[in-house]
Image 1 (spheres, one colour):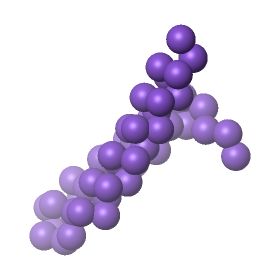
Image 2: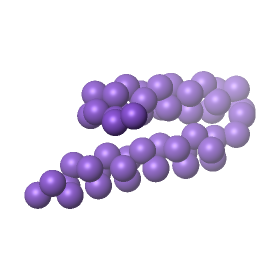
Image 3: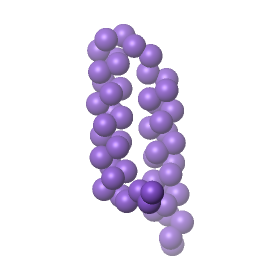
Image 4: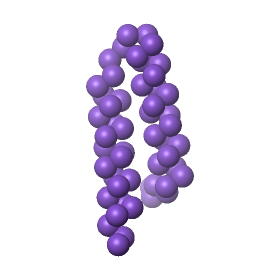
Length: 51
């Protein structure tokens, strides 16, 4: 499945909402932070490799 920029931003929004929820309830945040980092890296590679 090809991830478009809009889908990637939607997924990032979902991850930040989940992170906020876990922070509020004292749950583990590391896996979500890792997912955010991977998604951001994929987005940046996709955006700047075109040039």
